[in-house]
Each structure stands twice: as C-alpha cells, then as structure tokens.
Image (cartoon, rainbow over all chains, first blue to last red; front, side, top):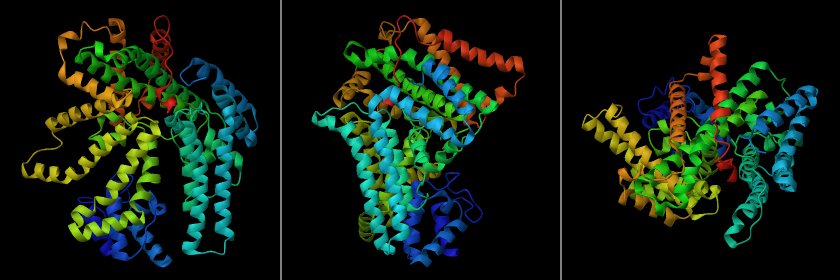
Length: 76
Length: 496
C-alpha cells in the first residue's frame, strides 16, 4: 500500500491522496494521469489492468486502487 | 416532427404524457416504447426496420456473451477470446449498418439514413462492450433494451446515454409528478428560447457568409464565423435542454451534454464541456482500449528503453488520442472537413499535453500568476480563436474553402467595411440576438458558479416567479425567429 501511495503522490502532485475519495469525481486524475498510474501499477505489482477496470469506483481513492490491485493479483 | 417545433412540445409530448399516465404502471414501458417507435416512424418511416434490426443484434449479442460466460468450459484467456469474437460480430453488424448508411456515399452510393443512427449505434456498442467487460448484466427483457436504444427525446441528437444510466428508470414506469412536469417544461422553454430567439435569428447571416464569403470583407467573414459558433452552441445546447427537459417530465435523468464550454481553460477542457457524452463515449470505448492495447504498450516499453519515461509516457496516450480524434471527425460525417476538424483538435490537445508541465515550471520560475486576470484574459482569447477556427472548418464545404475564408479574415480585414456588409440581419435582429446572448451568458456564469437558476426562480414569490416564466414564454412566441423572412431551421446535429 505504501508503494501505491508513493506512485499516486508522484502522479497526483499536491493532492491529499491518502484521504481523498474523489480522485476521479473531482478531476484530480485525468485520463492521462490514469494511464500513467495504470502503467506504473502494472509494472510495480505485475498485474494486467484491462479497460473494464477503468471505472471511477476503482480509481476514486488509494484504498479502492489497492483493493483492485489485490484482486487482480489474486486473479493471476 | 422535430423537438423545436411546437407540435412536439404542445401536441406530441402532452399526448404521450396523458397515455403514459392512463396506462397501469407495470405496462407503461409499452406506451413509452410505442411513442418511441411512432416518433421514429413519423421521421424515418419504414427505415425503422434498421433500428429494430440493431436492437435485435444488440440483444442477441448480450445474451450470447452471457450464455458463454455461464456455460462455456473455457476459462481465462480462452473465455476472453470467445467473448471477444461474439462482441466483434455484434459490433461489426451494428457498425456495419452505420457505415452503409453514412459512409458509402464516399463511393457514390447514397441511402437515406434512419434518423439518429449515429447516436443509437454508439449506444448499442457501449451496451455490448459493457456486457463483454462484465460491468453490466446482459438484458433478459428485450423491451427494456429497446426502450434504452430508442427513447424518443434522445433519438435525434443524443445525449448518448449508458445502459446503466437510463434503461431501468425508463422501464420502471414512474408516475408523472407535478414538480417534474413543471421543471421539465421550464427546461424545454429555455431550450426553445436559445433555439428560436438566438440560433435561428443568426442562421441567415451564417448561410450568407458561408455560401458567398468571396463577396464579403474579412471582418464580415469573421462575424459570420463567430455567429456560426454561437448558433451551433445555442442550437445544440438548446435542443439538449428540450431533450433533457422531456426526460425530466417522465422523471428520467438524462446525462448533460454541455457544461459552460466557453469558460474552459484550454482545448482539452473545452471538450470536457462540449458534447460531453460523445467525449466520454470515445474515452471509454476508444481512448482506454487503444492505450491499454498490447501492441501500444509494447511500443511504449521500447521507447522507454531508448528515450526514458519522460518520452515514453506520451506514447500510449498520443496513439489513443489520435484514434479518438480521427473517430470524432469521422463520426460527424464522410467529409475531409470533419477529418481535418478532428486532426486540428488532436494536434492542439497533443501540444497542450506536452507543453503543460514546462509552461507550469516556467511560470513558477518567473513568478507568473497563472490564475491572475491577465493570464485568464489571454487564455480566453486563445480559446476564442481555437474554437472559432475549428468551427470555421467544421462548417466549411471543403478544407480549401476553410483556408480561403481564414485567409480573407486575416488578409482582408477592414472593420469599416463591416457596417456596409449585408448579412441578412437588420438592427432589430442584431439587438434581439445580442440581448438573448447576454441573458444566456449570465445564466452560464451563474451555472459556472454552481447556482441553479431554476431553483432560484422557484424560490421567488409567486407573481415574480410567474413573471419570469411568462417573459420567457412571450419572448419565444413573439420574438422567436419565425414568420416572414424566416424559415424553420432544421436541427444541425440531427444530421450527424
């Protein structure tokens, strides 16, 4: 989770990524930032994120992102 | 039949409301579906067969995907492959109909297209893809899917809604409520105000300039182009008000298609506020799939190895952005002007993306306040030029005409010649259009500040409240652009 927060902090600079639950709803992460995030997460956690996973529910908070990564790791 | 005609809001819609309310709740969806198909028939007649075929294909595709997921012995990648084949067949069939009706004219083969084919085809693709992705369950009731694809207010111009947004509310047969009817009709009225009072009043000048720009000074051509941008905004957003207002009457929340686009910070932001549902559709079904496609990722990885992450991070988004803007251009029609329009925004947004970080750093180093008045004014001027030049090419009959008009604006611009130009509008027209534009601008400013104008009006005391709405009703009836010298202007986006 700490590694994910580091990645998120680097991409969403200036945002309170630890507590924010509206990263998508408040446009903190735009589509380019989402793609950078996906590429970093895929590399760091060795998972494959498909377009179906790119829904606000999965990207609105660090916690939701972590849940998605754990789920995808379990699927592997 | 068209949304801006009084036969729609004063005859068709009340008749549907009455029948809907008289029908028992459980079968109200049948009344609504019958209204959808009658509306379609009134415009496109027997071409409704294509709409029915698209509905059937979409339904079968969803059901087969669901069947394969439940019963196929295949798992993992093999299952994904099977699902992908079914999705591919479904998309080829529905998209194929769109290609036949819309794009074969490139080869000299022309057909009259069923109304709204560009819009409902995108809805069929989004539904089938969502079933494939597992984000929505395959529909078991074909009536619910048919309603989602053919809801009569949406069929001509969108907004392009998602199955998860409107399918169930449409089917539920919710009781009509006074509040919804009042608010819905207020929004319809506001749409008519924009369309009849402003857009249709500007239409004669736009037609004159674009069809005979050689006869005008650059200043008049510039005015014609700005008028077209305003006409398009008032017309398209006005029609959206009528459409979303109709949805509101039935208690259906349709997605918004405009969010004060002229207050955008740049071209990317403009497209997050203009024709929003097309943008989000392209993002979900073109941008992300292309960005995450294996070949694109592979190229990005190899670029990363050679040039580092600073360059490689742009590979996937840029490839996807190119596909998005090519699709956007082609979706509007089979013409080079539309492809040029798409590529124009691709280049602008690409430049914005690669310069964003350096510009921010430069501003910080030089202590420039990017949120200061001067920067905001500069941003506004830049956006004004970007949007108007884009619309010039969008409306021009050819790319060559677009450049020729642009050359006239920048090469033969004499402000003194403007007053002598005959744009087909008298002082009365110009004054009325100006007042209308100022009113819309004020409402947009309030919306941008998060103020709900309709809620504000609703909170006024009764005489004042009715005074406001009577003023809008009377202005549409008395000052709307009809009568001698005007013709009813068809909805621009219904042609796409």
